[in-house]
Length: 633
Image (tube, rainbow, N blue to C red; front, side, top):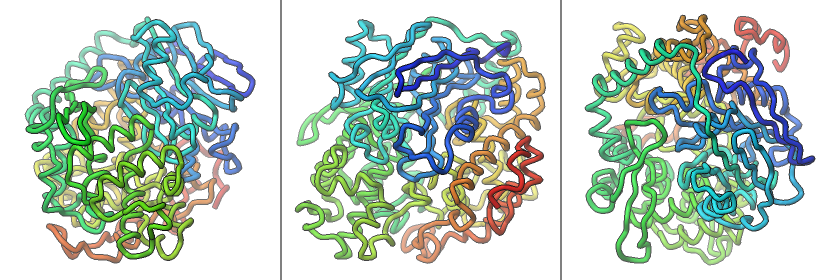
């Protein structure tokens, strides 16, 4: 392949036969779908359909880099995974930071496509041109941390970058995660269960090649401009929030505007939030700072608990995990939250789905719909950290009531019944993350329409937070600023969510970190266009309109994946709590998410039929997807 920014080849592994092929990355794939998420969308559309069992051998797991991965562009160190989700049964994706993605690129590959199912546990070794399968029987049953260490010992080199599943993936916990570089999680939608179903324990990669860009001079100009934006325009804001505290700084900030989930999304404000926030962590427990590849934000951190039942040194939890194991369960004990997050990483589970499914169980317990007979004697009263820790371990091994939690909140509530379904806070089977659409209308729309379910990283807007009026005016016009920056206003939010959905899809295709795209809102389509053109030499992408079209194509084909699975407008909704139960406390008290006021605008902006939510034939043809026109109405 002649384009810069790409390795030009990819690996395809059939675990059923044990065959491994190194193939050329098609130029048409690179040109039309860019990389990362785009590659996953196109390949899954072509190779997976509505008859595919997510836990069967015919499912595909696509692990992809992008044309900026491993370059000097800021925070270009992530990789993207995509598969049909075992948790939701529809589109599944997850991405992760650390160093695994760049290392795959340094080895000379744009992506790895896994299919089939091995008869015995194996792991994949990628060492530049050497690609082979190795026996993993001795690491089957090990934690993700143990697996990483043992695989490196096997290979005789601790510089190998390893992604691995833990016992949860082996036991097909439906929200099992993939953990790379000892603590970076590809968490959502059950990619770890896909690996477990295929008996693939890990992938280890070592690369010695650099990443070639098309125009070194032009690319370095783009890089310099990007760092200037980060350091000068947004530098102080980043240093005083993400760099200083990591994502836990969001606990205080989001709680203050009343959109932090508390008690299974019952409300969005908690008087004890400061006990689990960024300041408390930094002052009492933080001992070290960390970073992913090529990132000056450095939001990672490590903590140490020096005494008590949860003593130890841990990788610090992100905001989402603090909410999942903290405010959502009414636990204000930081050492317990650290331990819960550590277990989720070690055993290989998505902290959001895990914590929110336990929150469903706790509310069901409080309301008398779940009993000690159901839980095997576990007391699931709010705030019971000891029971939560025990239940996390049981979930990974599907022991007792843990086997119910392992199914995720939608299936778990269907198993128990008795009206507990009402308290399962999910969209399309994916547990709702740490935002609340009653306090932030556009996040409610984001959760409702996102392809993988309740997903804040599909299009979450921060423009409604203080200080972003200038950005809103520059992007969308002065006349729209008041409505766009009001979190309780629904006007223009359908168009905003559509625009940001395209922006995030391109960010996940290039692939760069969300914090350079979403919060603060640093890079926009024009920045991405210049970076993509300079890296690859695809001159048409110098025009931001071209990169917008590519992003729309990726998002529309991803939506069509779910349409083919039978999803329609009725599925773009939220639990009754958000639509009909006014926020009971906090700054957003009295509000519900007025979803219907935004959905029609979203569908019009997205080029979908407002009655069905299906992309129109005109939209499909405009995006080069005309072969899908007239189908799946």
